[in-house]
Image (cartoon, rainbow, N blue to C red; front, side, top):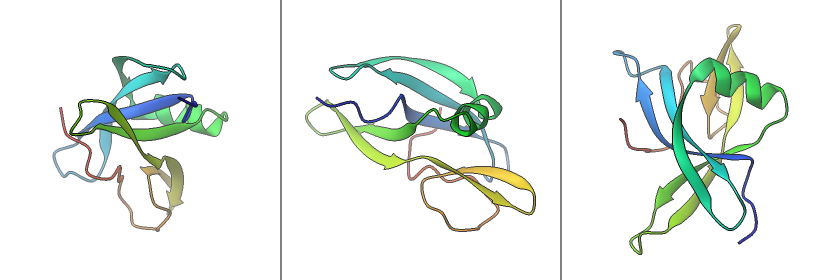
Length: 101
């Protein structure tokens, strides 16, 4: 299996308004395997992306194996940075329909 990104995101935790991600579950993409998850604060994800680290979303397929989702980007709206899989300019984080934890 070719490497999808440096890291993969499998789940999210939003704030009480459900507009900002507080934490994500991140896994190292080892090429042939996906590493165990660790929780990262959103600020660390933003900093890593700005530093050139790549992220994709992942989800479990019906066969129980990890599947690649979408590339993760930073979108700036009104001087605030958002983590998104699309590049629209809505003032909220959006990582597809990842499960919440």
